[in-house]
Image 1 (spheres, one colour):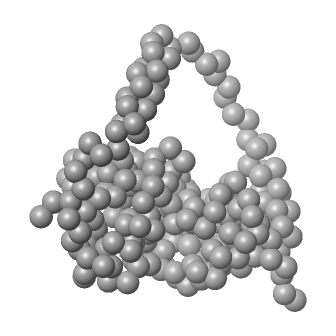
Image 2 (cartoon, rainbow, N blue to C red; image 1 turned 135 degrees about the vertical axis):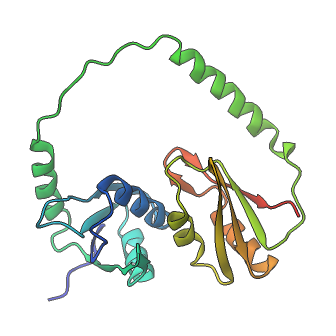
Image 3 (spheres, rainbow, N blue to C red; image 1 turned 90 degrees about the vertical axis):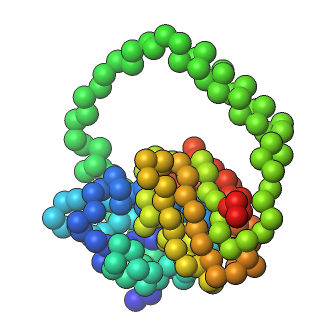
Length: 216
């Protein structure tokens, strides 16, 4: 019996050695290109190992993700993707068991100076936005320079994002710097296509990736 398309996709055959948090971040990184993700459910219980659910806001996003990422090598194992059998029923059940664990609720401590820092950051970022041409754009070449990457970025995540573009060669991370990386393509036309497509791509909800051509 065919399962009707819905917003939730069910993924299995995932690498069981990957920690839950890393798995969720990596899934977010590769699936958020298809549309807004409401939630990702991955449990490490014996019954649910190697499986995850990705819940999109739109059915179209889920359909696109299923078609594009079917069999995609994720942590060295091809993903098997299907629509979730009963929309988010399974997910709701999972969530039920998920939420039942009593969490220790700590009252939030007022942190002095946080608001001021936020304001300063806002001012900085608005100044940057007001003057986007502070960095002089390098002439096109086959190597892209990525900035504003989140702390959990790893080579695997970036490779999965960029190897969907023809001509992808390799990702090079910079030692002791999590926020920048280089991605090399065969030609500048290919690197430009990836640059245009992924400019401003959010690897996490708070980090929009900035892409420029690398200095020669």
